[in-house]
Image (cartoon, rainbow, N blue to C red):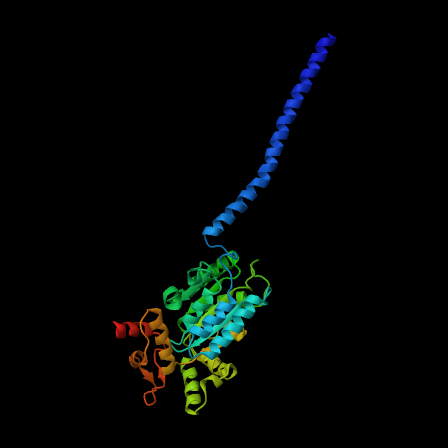
Length: 336
């Protein structure tokens, strides 16, 4: 009887040890699993971000030196633009905790370089430049063509901005043809451009908004022409003296900024004037295009390209009516 009890006890001990070992193994496996799942997700994300664009240093690496060089080398006749854009963008990028999103308004005549400068900014913040999934170019006449649909457009725009910034705080938004934007639409951006630490638990303060507009273009041209008639150097024009000109154009123009809370609440950080381009600047653009395409550059060829454009005013023919916008096609025509 005693022997039977001892054998039974041994059996119980053995069975208990077996079950405890199995439970321990399961617990250990579970513990490893708990660590392994997020570790696998982390490693998977890391591998993914080596191949596909993510909001990481590999894809988002602001090149301040390159931005400075490109603005000074590739933008002609726009000293106010190169100086102000460089200071504004670099200051914002270097600020680890900006008080608000950066908002720039590029104003001026067609062909003066507004889209070109926006592209340069994108190229030196995002590795993929304008192709980045965190850079959004909104064209008024293409994306928001109808005033009657403004409420629907507001929802679209709100969702676009919130989604992009939640994925990448440094998102860049470029609004082209602001003078043709449906009235009232742009007011939806007010909370994102104001001094709030977050909106709906998303921090928008590291993002950048650039608004391109022809508004004030005639006033800018007039001011620059008067300066030229007085025999003064173009480079002597100061940003402060152009502020009033641009603001007058924005307030009086029945476009995207008309009666906008962005203007009324002073949420645009810089109004940057793009001045009309003179013949000398047109030749600089032509030289750059010729070199890019591997063509010879001579004074004769440069003058031929410049002669293809129309200049204003009619009696003085000082400024190019289309800026540098048609230069590439004119070069192809001359060299074809």
